[in-house]
Length: 106
Image (cartoon, rainbow, N blue to C red; front, side):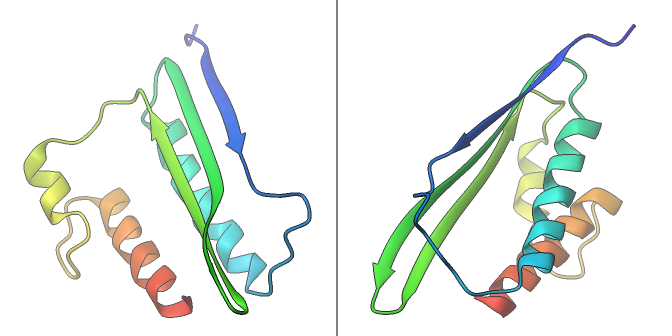
């Protein structure tokens, strides 16, 4: 039997916030990141967090974070994680692609 993993949603976005963007792609990114957290967390918790960041004229920054009690990564892997064309594993290469896409649509 697999131990229990709690999924905690700490979304702090204002209910009145309306943004225009690519909801489909953003949803894919968040699902991929949460899927990786679920895959590598055998027990404990996964915390999803979203909050409003800086606001300037007609733009708003939305901050997302996912933390978990999974197996984690060593310091060397973390340093290589967001380098393009440096594949640590399939999971880390997806994270690199996700970061590049986020920078592209920002």
